[in-house]
Length: 125
Image 1 (cartoon, helix red, strand yellow):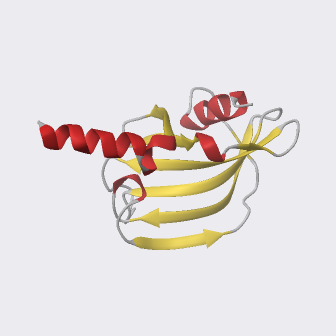
Image 2 (cartoon, helix red, strand yellow):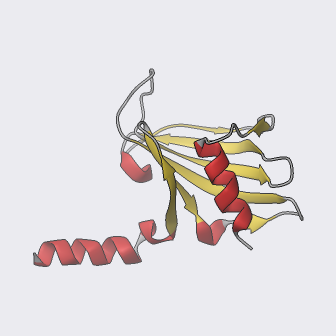
């Protein structure tokens, strides 16, 4: 019991404390790094997103990835600026690959994880 309480204290005060769960589906749980979310302009928000995959699927060789993204709150679109894949859950383990490139804007489909990210990220002031 003492070990569980110590672990809970470490996790709540440590690196995971700033990650806020946004949404999940049958494949992944998505988190946003609230303290690193910045409004770049009236309509654009820049933030970090962590995708914690529940299992390896679809040819993925990583359990989690952390992405720097921009959210266009007016157009309801998302683009990726950088990404790092990790072998372990919650951005732990070995870094498998990193990339720094700007993708095209993707519009969020209705009732999707991307729409949930936009809704939450754009609500941060």
